[in-house]
Length: 230
Image (tube, rainbow, N blue to C red; front, side, top):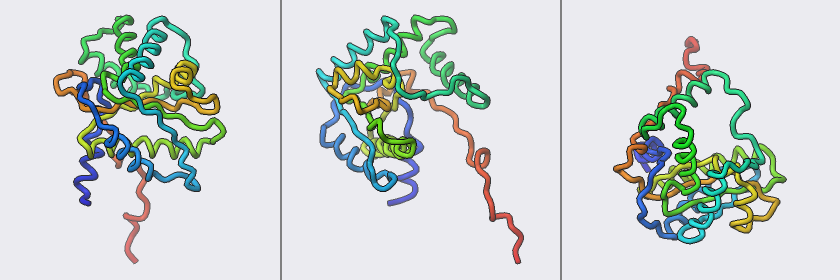
């Protein structure tokens, strides 16, 4: 295994928002999840549970969620993904990625109907042939949620190794009751997020968005390297 191949899988990962309808074999999805499950977790608890949808079950869930969203139904998230107020530099980063995307899509400030429709695309899994819903036992604590993040990252990177793309989506966490009802998920499980999986549409303008990243030297304190020799 080369560093270049690992780095390529990580650095070519992007949140894709338009997919081709090309099917993805179940065997490929299962392989990606098997690989992702090598993520570390405290005392090997492996707190993740995945509900994978394609075809009619995915369409049925999407239809229910889009209808709910477009009707302006209140959300019922069981955890707060974003802070109530965004301090800097997080507010500026959030605004930039949002307006960069809307500019590509030709959505101007104040066009709330177009924004709402674009947000609804989340619940259609952006046209991807495979949708995934991730849940966690509500009895588990924040450490297991941290472990879950490593599992989700593994999925996105392993998918790149198969030439596939993904989009992790927090939007699904605001529709707990509908998702539980549609998928038969027991009440002890909390919806963490969703994810789209498939082949990126190369002609979709929204897929040209490449978000910026801060360099390691700007968020890291290195200790020891500059110590004087003895």
